[in-house]
Image 1: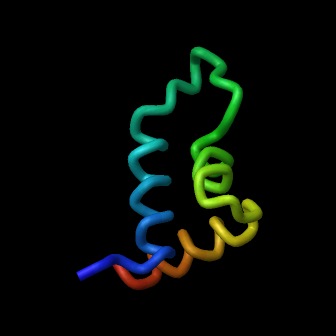
Image 2: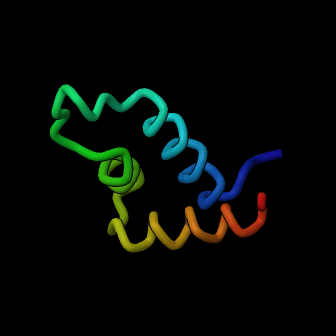
Amino acid sequence: MSQSRERRMYLMWKAEKARHDYRRGEPHTPLMRVAQRFQVPIREVREAIEAQRGQTS
């Protein structure tokens, strides 16, 4: 049973967000890392995250 692409984007964003160190000044935000990994615009990643948040809440 495979997960949808939106779900994978959401889970990766959540994991990246948890380990991102904002104090250290890392160059890429978790949102940008997910967009680079899936090779899609940030806008699509935001839409996928919002869709998944709506389902889980």
